[in-house]
Length: 443
Image 1 (cartoon, one colour):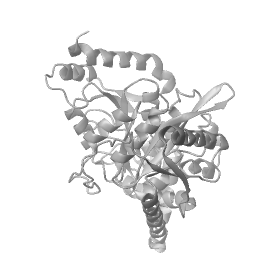
Image 2: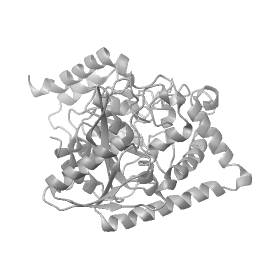
Image 3: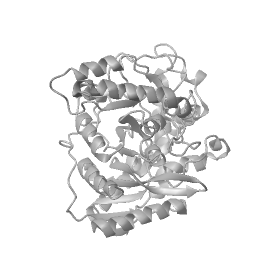
Image 4: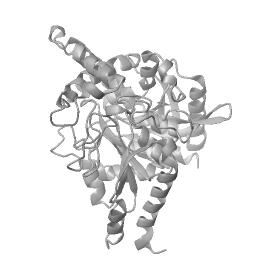
């Protein structure tokens, strides 16, 4: 088969697989009706871009011209994007192909992937269990072999948790590294668009394209060109972070991976504590509630779809009502300001940690993916605790990644577990280089 035919045929293969298997997985909300035409156009180019032939699924809170940015909500069920988000524009310019829009927790509000208005996403790597959220479809689509890569958004772990549960790579860049123009945000001070894929190298390639400062997103910063660094022969010092309450079976997988890193890569390891990290969840959610409440005031049924309070699910309503209460004038912003204060303390603690260690590693999440539907019987505290190890990096604005570390056996099941690697602000190239070495141990 000639190269000119390759991408169109590849896309046809993905479409066939989606048609045959996605009814069970429920990863896609919409397929791109023009995808084969776009693939043929890319195939016909003489000069190929950096992302030539890579096929992407896109979380449905990121605008793609002509496709529905529903945020997996009845609120925006019929909203068709009128423009491309900056990340989409950059991907298209480098010959990446958008195959469709992916399921997620409604308005990115959730840790399980069960809160979509269009049904939960099943975990093809551990069937019958949650994918994790909120970028549930983004992880499931890659794990199921429906696309090469996907875009997600990460506010408190929404890329890394699904990546861990589904056994794929998931990268949350440093805050400000990637433009969020065109993202329907959950929390303006925490959100970051990132990438999920089958290997670190592909993710790094995509991030090198989509990263960069731009005027339409004032949170973006110039961290320099994002390039994966080479750590094949360098000695790295790793800080191992532990959290009370982590499932012992998960911790055993992580400890085994750290031991393998020491034995095969010769890197140095030391234990580390981050002060105030036990307050991360309690700090994270007031910020999310307030900022989500503020951001959703535009969904009043006049310009965009339906009024959000009339049609949304209970988790979205919980966050809107919580944000409304915290924002009341009689509180004069005291709870939001206190949360911002602890956020700053956690950020400073990580800065101190990275003066001593090149990176910090931990489990991605303290709990295994539960069975779909089991969340109905869990307390809110139990559900929110799933963010305990991921939301600190969002509060600190640092970069982080989930890399497959192994499996936990539960009866006949083998459930994927990811190891989280964190590096300092703007050290995304370093993070990716370290992650590639860890990933290589499993090959």
